[in-house]
Structures are given as structure tokens and as C-alpha cells.
Length: 350
Ligand SMILES: C[S@@+](CC[C@H](N)C(=O)[O-])C[C@H]1O[C@@H](n2cnc3c(N)ncnc32)[C@H](O)[C@@H]1O
Image (cartoon, rainbow, N blue to C red; front, side, top):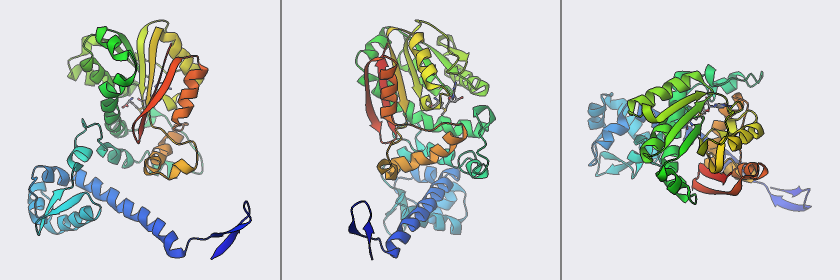
């Protein structure tokens, strides 16, 4: 079938029904894959397979993971179908290459397993659905500890890519940190970035700022467990209320700068709080700013995150938006780089 594109006044081909149905079915298949991964993580099935690199039959897997044999066979076939498992010999299954690191190792820079527990929380889809008519908003002090824990699991690989790999791409920064610098992490959440920075750069002192009291308590615990209490301090404040001057050599923020309620005020506050020559580093999701970009796989994952961002009254933004923000606020040497399809870094100096 053909129709006429009014913009061009030339006939354009219309996709056929099976092609359009295929798009929908691909989403359903993705949902089955997601739920299969979720069940594999929740029931220790991937973990059992990791411990048996030579493979397990579905029955052996059931014995190892303490699951029921028939159900485990059904799960194994779905996980094979999703490309998460491969076959080994006639009847055994093994994890497909790198799935152990990608799904199970939260210290691996490419770890994506954390997204499963975030998307599994009611805060993302169920609450958005519930409030789609009312547009009711929420904030971090109203979400569950499970949600905060899951988000912090998603933040871990961002920290692992940023520290030290990402930071080492910023001219002059590592030398400053190694010599001993004063560092502030904004929106420090559960504190994993504070610990990672303090361990990586033994001469720095670091402060964690967060507006949510529960997150500060959580971060204090993370820092205490790492034995770093003497090098890390805390400030409960919003980004907009930060009121310090010429104090820090580095201020950084992980997957949170898009959450500032008044981003211009917050950026001014950062500039004021930096020492002359100090660095501001934003590590965040690069959401596309054109419709073309929305159809990529990373953007579609980020569109899931946008459902929660909307509920706290913000949205992920593009790297270009942050570059412009820093230039508008008179930062010098503003630049950016891609660390992964879901992760960009933007930086500038006072
Ligand atoms: C997505 S979480 C990220 C936490 C941490 N950076 C990580 O990567 O795991 C966002 C954090 O920012 C904090 N936050 C959001 N908006 C804020 C604001 N305007 N002022 C202060 N903290 C804020 C929240 O309380 C939450 O701990």
C-alpha cells in the first residue's frame, strides 16, 4: 500500500501489518527476557551456573539452586531463548560469555544486573501508572528503602567507570587528586562513590552531600563499614541550598545532576564552592534530545528511568544540555566524553 507524504508530495511505502505486529511482539519477547533474567537472579539460577562453568543439566541446576526440576527446565529454555544461556554438549546449559560479569558482578564496570531490581520496584512503572491521571509527584524521602538500595546498585557501575578511568581522561585532575585535594560529592546517595574515591585517592578528604536524611544515614554506614570515617564527612542539604565558598578542588555528581530543582542556582552554588581552578564533573545518563535518538536500545532503557524521574518532577537530559549549562555559567575548558552507551561525563573548571 502506498500513501502520499504531504511534506514531499511523493508516494511513500506503508509498512505491512505483519511488520507492524513484529514490532509489538519484539517488545513482548523483551518482557519475557526481562522476567526470565529477574527470576534467574532472584532464585540463584545464574549464580549456580556461574559456579559450574562446564555446564549443568536443568535437573542438576534445580538441585544446585534448590528449585523444582520441571520449572527449572522451563526457565532454562526461556533463558536460552533470550541468549543468556548457551548449550554445552547435548543437554547441559552454561552462562553465555560475559553474562557472569554483566549480571552478577557489581564491581564490573559493565555491570547491568542492577537495572533489573530498579525496574522491578513499584516506584518506576506501577506508581507512574497509578498517577498518570493525577500527575501526583513524589521525592526521595517518600520512596522505599528497597528502591534506594536498588538505585544505588545501578549507580555502582557508573562509579566504577568514572573512578579512576573516567577521571583520568580529564586533563590535570588525577595529579591534583593524588597530591591531596578537597572533594565534594553532590547527591552522594548510599555512599559507594565516597568510599570508591577515598580508596582510590588516599590523600584526599571528601564530603558527601545529600538532601535525603535516610540516604545520609545509609552513606554513613557504608563509609563506616569501609573504615573510612576519619576521611569522609557529611552534609544534609539540597543542591540549591549549598552555600560554601572557595573550598573544594573537585565537585562531582553521579546520575543526579538532572535532578536539581533549580539547576542554574545549583550550578552557581557549585562554582562558588570551588577553589579557583577547581573541577566540576557531571557523570550522568545521556538522554537524546531528538526523536531520532529515542529509538536506540540505550535510549529505550533510559525511557524506563524517565518514568521515575517524571514522578520526582525532572527528566534526564542530553550531554549537550550540560555542556551548554557549564559554558553559560562561565566554566572554563568545558568538554565531555562517552564512557558507555548509558553513561557520559561532562566537566569544566572554575
Ligand atoms: C539517583 S540517586 C543517586 C545516588 C548516588 N549518586 C548513586 O549514584 O548511587 C539521586 C540522589 O540525589 C539526591 N538528590 C536528588 N535531588 C537532590 C537535591 N535537589 N538536593 C540534594 N540531593 C538531591 C537524592 O536524595 C538521591 O540520594
